[in-house]
Amino acid sequence: MYVVARGILDRLKRWENDISAIYYPYEYKKGAPLGKLQLSIRPIQLYEVVFPESCKSEVLSTIYPSWNEDNIKFKAMQLMLRKIVGGEEIDMTNIQPNDKLYRDFVGVIPISIRKDKYDKDGIELL
Image (tube, rainbow, N blue to C red):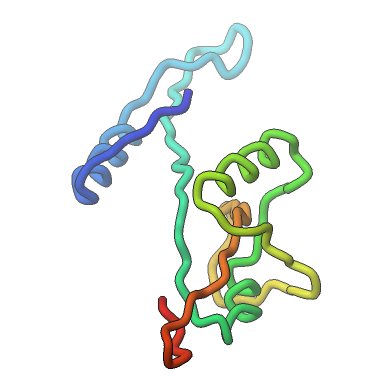
């Protein structure tokens, strides 16, 4: 099931916590006593990452994608979100992951990247 939840951050965190405290009976093995299965949620979140253009390679190494991009469902989601937020496909050629972030059990899908705008003095507008 997929749902959209909206609210003040502390209320959303409480809602998430309350969901995670619910257990349902679950048949793990035929003929065995019923076990308990925790109601689990896996958030899918869209982040806008803001950084100076001069740091692009380092940021791409840090936020390195870690999800199977060949999956047709994820490709469709990428394309849909790219249309919504604008921008171009992210070129990951010659980009290697660094170890600045904990990434175990976190899937990252690259969506798009936009060119920065500059003011009349050549200062990047972030």
